[in-house]
Every structure is written in C-alpha cells, then in structure tokens.
Amino acid sequence: MDITKTDEKTAETAPEPKTEASSEVEAATGATPEPDAPAKPDAQAASAEPAADASDDEAPDDELLAETPAGTGVGAGGAAVVSAALGAVALTGTWTGKVVSERETLIGQITSQSGPPAQQISEIYGDAWHSTALVNGVFSLLALVTAVLVLVLARPERPVWVRAVALGGAVLGGLGLLLSAGTYFDLFLSLPTTGS
Image (cartoon, rainbow, N blue to C red; front, top):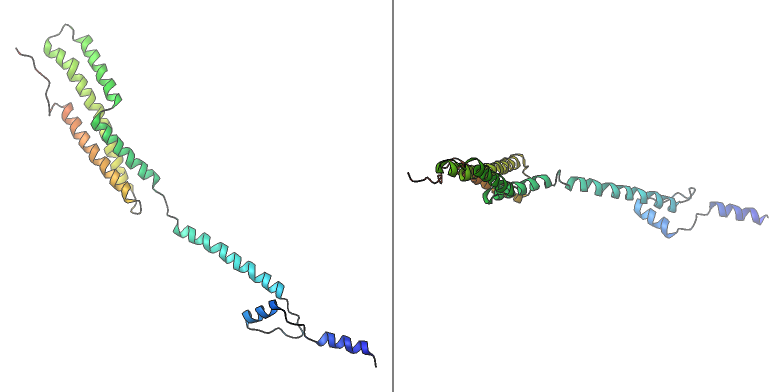
C-alpha cells in the first residue's frame, strides 16, 4: 500500500482550520464557507473596510453642505454699520463741512468788505451755515439710502443685529436730513438782522 497517496488525498479533502477572521466573517454574513472553496477572510475584510470608509467620507461632506448657510451676511452687516456711522457723522458735523464753511466765510469776507452790514452777515455767516447744512444733508441722505437698501435687501436668515443697526442708521439719517433741511432754509434759526 502506498502511504503517500492517501496522505495527499486526505490533505486535499480535509477542511482548512478556522481562523478568528473567518469566524468573524461567518458571523457577520451568516453563511458558512463551502468545504471545497477556500475561505479568504483577509480579502473580504479588506474589501468591506474601503466601502465603509467611502460612505463615511461622503456623509460628512453632504452634512457640511446642508448645514452651511448660503451667505454669511458680512456685506449687509458692514453696510448697516456704515449707515449708522454716516448718520452719526451727519448729526455731529464733518471735517468736509468745516472746510466748506471756512471757505465760504473767507469768500464772504473778501467780497463784502465795502457792502452794507446785512450783506456782510449774509455772505460771511449765512453762506457758511448753509454750506455746512448742505454737506451734512448729503451725509444724512447717504446714511438713509444705505440703511434703506440694507433693510430692503437683507434676507430673513441674516442676524437680527444687521437689521437693528440698519434701522438705527435710517433713523439717524432721517433725523440728520430734517435738521440739515431746517438749517439750510433757516426754519429753526434765522440770520441776525441789523438795526436800522
């Protein structure tokens, strides 16, 4: 009897011993490997891991895109702050208004040296006041227009402070516009008059 042939046959037909990886695969899939087909636990485990990683990589990107707002509102917030600042500057006066006022005063002094007192008052002081009111009125109008644009164009998902600051800028701009118009047309204070 040939012993080597029987050993070869038993080695071919004997099932391979189970490893821990093959036991885990069987438990996960619920299937047992066939005795003729050799189990490939390392290949199956390796192919299962990239699929799980790929789905994990795609899911956070989708979640981030869904949670990211369409815009941050930086432009609207900046415009609201600018409108409030312009409104405050229009009420307190600007360097530009001061320069224009001093220029008008100088022109009035040059042109009205030999004129009557009423003309001197009008050209030296009245023109300077009206120029200051005009410059402040321009700043007030800019503040009002900027604030109204922010309030009209701001989306509902913008932060509440953007609308609040824009509303403050609109109020300051409107108030500055009223005061500038009243000063320009001498509604609040009239020019001093000389006695006859």
